[in-house]
Image 1 (cartoon, rainbow, N blue to C red):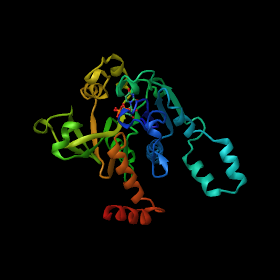
Image 2 (image 1 turned 45 degrees about the horizontal axis):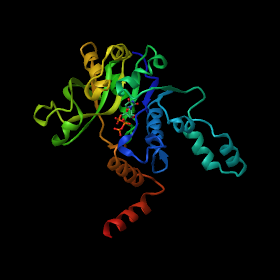
Image 3 (image 1 turned 90 degrees about the vertical axis):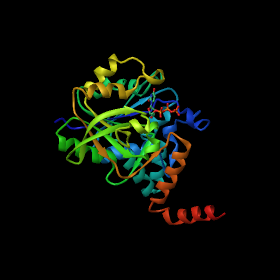
Image 4 (image 1 turned 180 degrees about the horizontal axis):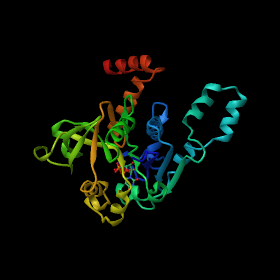
Length: 291
Ligand code: UTP
């Protein structure tokens, strides 16, 4: 069983649901409480043992690269002013030298295509894939839980899932649930946006994956599917005929920060979980709700 050392973050999407906020600022740089969305997801990956962080970016996404770089002037100024706490916060968020890679998806041709753009950097080893829009709040982190399923199964592919109400299954990718396997279960089927009566379960695919490198060969051959985009699900369905897929049920909270509602809810959820802010923030919210 090869270890999972690398994680891919596809950040080349246009973020049209979030305009005008995302006209000049990448949606992954919008802030949830005190750090950009992408930082929350990188923190989750690091806590799960990831050593190399691969970003598939596009035009106008330079701020993401800058965010994970040293900011020499800022650090020198903080040093001069003796701001040890702030310096510590910056250092904790900073990946080690050489631990990040950035590649470009020149055109947003779909999630599957974005993942394929990372093939040379990932190489011939299994990798984690985290969709930065989807914030998974909980301890242990979602990817850490998936790593346990991967270890129990001694390899294979792992997908994180979360329960949704039956009447919402038509909005998501849904998996069929087979026998238990260590901390997870065997996935028996995957269906993209099924009708409630056809859905094999109410477990939605939540945007975290551990995938074997054979997925790249399948993505290379794939033509555009639903919506004219190269879909990841189509290649995963073919891969599932050749290799096992396991599910990990994440019991924390999930926020879809690609939508305005999910983003607002994430700020409330993370604000209420913040040691420094929770008490005062709760009072603010209670005051607003009474008004
Ligand atoms: P989304 O479809 O949610 O992102 O893709 P989007 O296209 O940016 O959003 P809207 O619908 O226009 O508001 C899920 C993830 O896949 C990435 C996105 O950046 C996002 O993190 N993605 C999507 C790519 O990197 N490339 C693509 O071609 C499509």
